[in-house]
Amino acid sequence: MRKITVASNWIDLHCHSTASDGTLSPAEVVRLAVDVGLSALALTDHDTIGGVQEAAKEAGRLNLDFLPGIEISAEYPQPGTLHLLGYGVDPQSTTLRDLTKTLIAGRDNRNPKIIDKLQKLGVAITMEEVQRESGGKVVGRPHIAAILARKGYVSSIKQAFDKYLAPGGAAYFDKERLSPAKAISMILESGGLPVLAHPIQLRYHNDAELERLIKDLLDMGLAGIEVIHSDHGPELIEKYTALADRFGLLKTGGSDFHGSNKTRIQLGTANGRRVPREWFDGLVGALAKEKAAAKFA
Ligand code: AMP
Ligand code: ZN
Ligand code: FE
Ligand code: FE
Image (cartoon, rainbow, N blue to C red; front, side):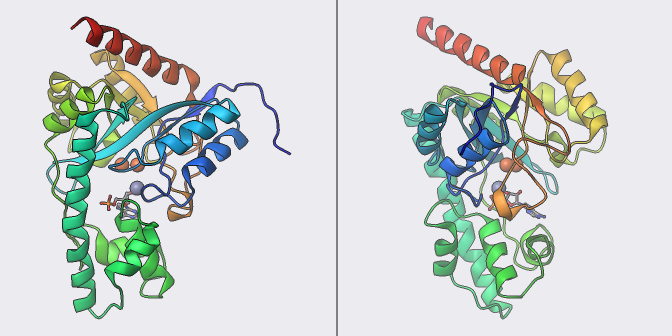
């Protein structure tokens, strides 16, 4: 029997389902959030909101507060990655539909190149297998990695990235990305709030460079920084908190849970840290303000 818990002080604002490259269905992610005692969740699949309707319905049934979200990759010089989270996007928005179409076209262009290269390297893998692995949803490199691991070409998903799929790997291809300005404006036009995901993954060279980037993103309309994340230790959390406060940005946080595609990450915990409930309320408050402002624009 499911435990009945009093709404907790903890939340998770960054996780993936089978709609992209997670291994639990949207409803399963929601049930797990309730089981680990969270009071609010945002689903942030890569390039799609295909899972949010199912998740929202299950969250409603289980009394879990829920925000639709999306995670998109923007242009950024290698080897860093710039991911933007969009919270509270309106599923009915035509801008959002255009955005996801563009992003998925970028994947449809890239994925066959990876498979082609793998085949040339003597790996027995087809695009059909990859489609099957993804359940017909948004195809990501973790799906390809899972097949490589299962067939014994590598010993783990991590090794699949190191050897083949990450930059420098034998079958690496980048996908076309939007500029950060375009990604931010499209999230805003979709009724959402753009948040810089896991800043550590930018691989900035020094704090000045990070600050400059955040200032630029702020001018483009950035609304928040993901302060707590599974890749952030206590010092980084302190640094990003100070930056968010200094620039008047919202603070968000989440695990970046992917189910068994990333076994070290548990829903509701990020590198031993939990994300405070106030950060969800802050996002919801900012979204309400934005909607009210849009009405009078
Ligand atoms: P894609 O969206 O297809 O470009 O793939 C991105 C996904 O691959 C994200 O979930 C990343 O967390 C995951 N990923 C990227 N690099 C690595 C890596 N070196 N090891 C494991 N997963 C990775
Ligand atoms: Zn992912
Ligand atoms: Fe990311
Ligand atoms: Fe993510």
